[in-house]
Image 1 (cartoon, rainbow, N blue to C red):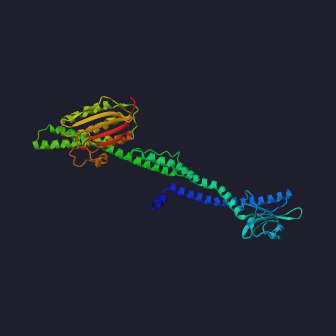
Image 2: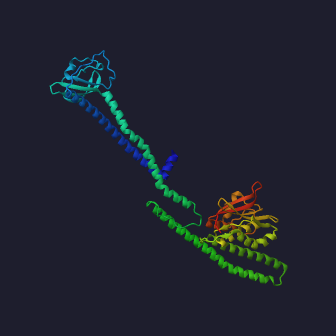
Image 3: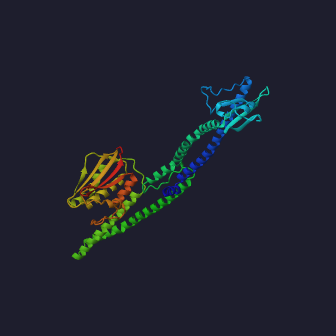
Length: 452
């Protein structure tokens, strides 16, 4: 009960459904009572009219009365529905038993017209009529059977209400679901958006009552997009501004290395040059991240995955050879992706660079591209330690480094990969290459297949 109250307080659709159902129920009850009473009174009126027609028929046909003998049975005679026709003055010598079929002990002073009397303990509806020959007749019937027939007729008239009421409730519930469906669809579309998709929501096909709320969300999305653009511009501008002094420092360090100095000074100079190189690498990664997060227009041309693989391997092969890593491409089939070549190049370069860094000496790095489920599946596998399941969401955060990692890096590689994947509509998945041993990392990205 508490759960229903909570849902009722939180759901406009449920409150509207309950309110309409209660309103329909109240109206149906009032209409049902009115229809039942009207049908009941109409049935009684028709039965009174039947008594009147019998009296008119008696006079028109100039009938005579012959009361049945008690010992004579008549086939089809029903005591409950029997209509008694008698001269009113015959009631003075009528038997006390009203079931005999003879005249009823009616008082001779009854006025013309309809009346309800209790005769020998049984209620009767009686019509008294004066004939043309001045004789008076009475047409009577027990009210029990009349009321029973009237109730049955009234219930038959009420039957459509009983059938239509649940049907109407179902129609109202279905109508409300259809009326709220645009809002549900809109919520689903917004929920499927990526982190970088901050364009305005189309409010043209939404109900007028919801439109102000959507317009407010659009204004909020605009402010968020403006804030994120400012943040990206700041990162890009800061990286550009830092690039020149670091380049100058690198040149000064190279010139200093040519000068005569002690072994201790040369050792410290080597450490300084390594720090400068890491700083330059971090700046390049920050620029790449800012570019990856920008809402660039996708390229219309299809890019060869193997061509990108060759360029990346040419650049990073010396780093792999230093660690004696066996690196190469599996499979000979080349596939094409409708991506910007710079995006795909940055994505693959970061994946392969990470794989080489975290793969131990003498390890293996494999690149592959295959068709799967109507799309292109790109995979980069290594024989390194892999990433624990509980860390697989965190590793995409900027500057996050796995615990226990001894490799030098900026922690931006997978952030760049995720940003490009989201912007290009790719699905990304991390897994172990060797699940039983929990070793090796397999990074898989899936895109819809593009034609060459």
